[in-house]
Length: 159
Image (cartoon, rainbow, N blue to C red; front, side, top):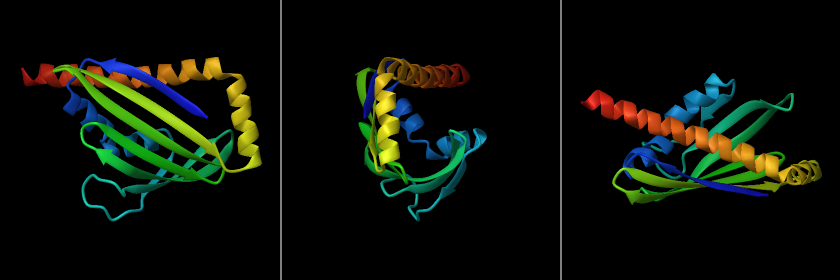
């Protein structure tokens, strides 16, 4: 199953890329929401090969997954891969500079089931595709609005 959306952000390309590439910020955000996050790689700094083990509650059960940063093309794209017992997930984030202060973010997620139960679950998600697409777009839109707000605050502080 594939989901994708794109949003335009009123912020420079470098700021938007750095915000999406702030893995420590994403770790903290996941932990605030109750997930267990453990970094498992030995990569120094930011780059492909970074990896994490995650523990989180989904549909009333504790789930485990591993996530790795598969590819970085600074400042054009980021690719993350997630592996769980039920499914594999790939998240591709592409960035395009529209102007000096405007960036287009295209975010795509592909979910590949590993088990029959996961196939059935994804099939039920496909039946509610319209609602799922709207939720996905709303979440990505909220994230992009938050990035715009961070940029506005950083510009205001600099003045």
